[in-house]
Length: 266
Image (cartoon, rainbow, N blue to C red; front, top):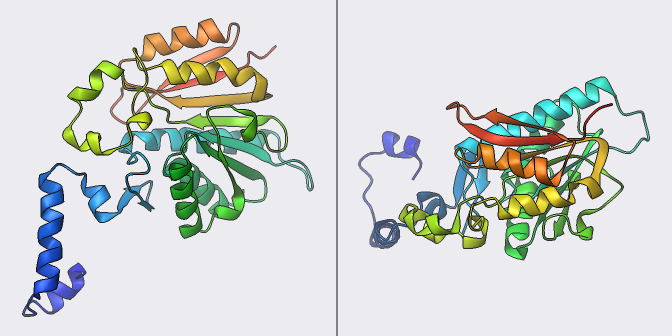
């Protein structure tokens, strides 16, 4: 029952069927399964995002990535508005998972009147994750703005209509050795969505290595990282993209959370 129903009719009894279902849910939670998986939904950036074991549960800190992405798109389109009939500003969400980030971006920009100027690509190497992302995009009315691709990082399949103007990504960044020490709830999530290799940045490096091929001349990338990976992430950007600009943005708690990279301006 919804909360309002309980308050309006507290005298209503509970049948055996609902009691059995509730007991089964309690058993799942006792075993450590995340509440989001049990409920099938997680609130993210003001949206109810459908979640299940096909993809990582979106975290609050990832909302920082959405905020930065929105600010970048707005600034870019303000500085250089798209003329009628011109190629839209292209945003690529790599490792989209549940689609939380791309759906939040598409919904927010669409409501702000940018829907005709921006188009999105959402990719993931997991077919299950892409199917979940499509379900969320349909549920929030933005599926027509997004091209979905099953692809690993910057594989050719992600290329749609020319260079990408903005890459956003919440890629796996947990060091392999740290996985057993995560809360038990994380053991229910896809390992490939968490495991970032020996130092946590293996997948991020893989994306950085291919950026120059897909990113537009004025493009940029925003990548979520672990709060203790700032120095290593900047070093990786400097090594793989020499001469590019790299910086860090903090999350709401003030910890480094997003690595930004862009081609150096002349």
